[in-house]
Image (cartoon, rainbow, N blue to C red; front, top):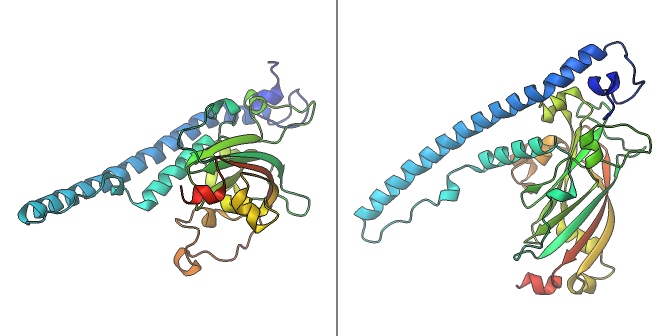
Length: 300
């Protein structure tokens, strides 16, 4: 594509010609990917060390249980492998992977092309609006978001960054041009499954450097059961319909509440309080298609 000081410096607005500070911005723009990759690698090494320690502890416990089992007539079951890591470590690992995925634009080519055999339904999501005039998106400190991006997740699977379509004539890099504002998920369970929504400010330099938590602009949980309820005109339709279509305005929660181990833990256990900062809202168009009626899936 055409090169210019604007593109090299990573500016989002202004003239293509040189503007004071472009050289410094350009040098930082070229270096930020390397800085971010190194920061992510350091976090990964720290997590690997924690996982290695927890795996070692679990292995010693398993050896002790095996020894006791051999000494006793009835025997003792070994510690299952999936219990090697603590819930906190699993959650931290998942969050690190989600943060890394948010730096790449989401494209439909990364989604499954065929329906999985064990899928009970499909959820299609379209991003309609990021914030509003009454509830603009903002950082934890209340600073307005410059260039917000949205990430979605369901049953552990995450998207890249979703962006709203740019107006005609508006610039952007190749990653922005390729990404979309839509995502599709196949899911295995309805009850207990939540669509997770994460917002970051891509326009903040700290995001590009790998400090995602400092540029977080709020998140939310949308239960699939809520989509069924809101997409039904009556109680009978909640059990008989297979397709549900709604437009939903979601109020965003702070990072401390989005990253709790269990969103249903009481406030005195998680330390969660009424949010002091209002992050704003996001508007989504949700289409949920079940492969069978809710009544049938409930007892399948």
